[in-house]
Length: 178
Image (cartoon, rainbow, N blue to C red):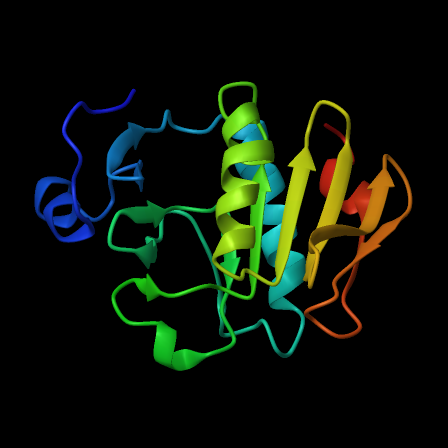
């Protein structure tokens, strides 16, 4: 659901409590439904794996966390990694290094087109798209040309990160038993 009046990030934060599942995109508020159990289990499995990496351990959090990219743009990625501690206050101000979005039918278009363009424009170095129905993970890294597919796996195999050196994730660890 979106609002009719365009808001600034400051107005947005006054209107919506910290734990609200809402995003501000181009000044419009989008309410997000609560994720389902399978979605959250996938988030927990990926987050658990990321937290084992020494660089990510104290710099990776799940949603809800506000990522303020501009005066009219506040997103809540499923998982976010930020290497620069100066960007982290009560919220994250500026581009994270890595964003993970678990794609659901209700967020499909927004995650694979709108948010991908937004993260690319704002310099997010790595963007993961996780597709539960297809049991697929796609890892995109930012290059001079924009996002390019860096790593990809379906059902079996590993994906790797270009941002977190040496990080690999078995796709079966994420989707096993689902």
